[in-house]
Amino acid sequence: MTVLIIGAGLVGSQIARILVEQGERPTLLDQRFQREALAQIVDLEKVDLVEGDILRPLTLSQAICKAGITSIVHTAAHPMLTLGAARDPYAAIQLNIMGTVNVLDAARVHGVKRVVVSSSSVLNGHMAGGEDGGDLTREEAFPRPSTFYAATKQAVESIGHNYAAIGIEFAAMRYGPVAGPWGGPGGGGPTVMFRDMMDAAIAGREAVVPSAALEWVYSKDAARGTVMALQASALPSRVFNITMGKATTAEELAAALKEVFPGVKIRQDKNNVPSSARTKPAEITRAKKILGYEPQFPIVAAMRDYLEWSRKFAPKA
Ligand SMILES: NC(=O)c1ccc[n+]([C@@H]2O[C@H](COP(=O)([O-])OP(=O)(O)OC[C@H]3O[C@@H](n4cnc5c(N)ncnc54)[C@H](O)[C@@H]3O)[C@@H](O)[C@H]2O)c1
Image 1 (cartoon, rainbow, N blue to C red):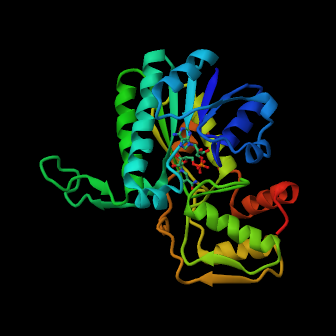
Image 2: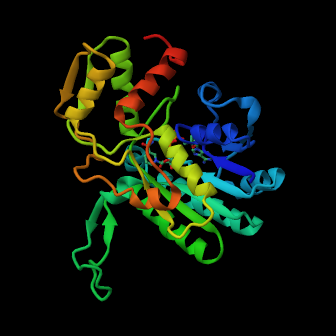
């Protein structure tokens, strides 16, 4: 298997690390590599880097042909996800939807067997409609995304299913809010919130937790689930929820912080109720059954792992 990883950020870097640990030499394609941050996660001697924009289809063609790519993992997205798409819907639609179409169509033209894309658990929550209970003769049968970002992810899943019907092995990974080590800009609102909270606790400052439950996933688990979909012998399902398997409440998050940082000062920010707040977590049974996915980083383990990375690499506050 020769893998092209598109997007070398918070999640893409971990996917590269896992493949390198398995003895592969993946190619990473990114419009703007953050080399220092990337080198903290994966040995840059063991990957090939191609600077390029997925909105330029020939760049994709060139990368696929040059390395003889047989599988693609596509993680690139418009910066700051839900917030970024709300600020600049046109750019987010262009990159998230047309960028993915370019990837899928390049795969079709060049005979790439499998394409795994990053979707989001926003599709398990940011929905309106659906009142007509699936009755196709009625207008409100299907729930529709209520944010631009979720709308782009729904389009990507729908388009991917149709490429699957013409021969591409397609899978979409619905990550929960991703937390994890990354030494630069990347991820979405909750990613930044987790980092700020951890960095404050590490520096002995007051750590601020949000006032809502979130169904986090640690970046290493998100990447592992994605690699499992890339390597599964068959994909009888094409959409997989990849989370910690539970919604962590504000109180549980605070208790986890106290376990990792005894004596830490914590403030709950009553005004911070992230749009990704959830009371009912996503079902991860399908990922468990078909991919063998089991989260390895519940919240305390995630915090300990982040702390270990931070001690090695993060600039001292
Ligand atoms: N971070 C989260 O909380 C979260 C949650 C659910 C789903 N996701 C999805 O997971 C995927 C990965 O997220 P992430 O947090 O690793 O993002 P990230 O921002 O850390 O990484 C994305 C990378 O894509 C690159 N990129 C952007 N535009 C590009 C282009 N035109 N051509 C080539 N590369 C380009 C960026 O330079 C960046 O390195 C995204 O699709 C995102 O929607 C993320």
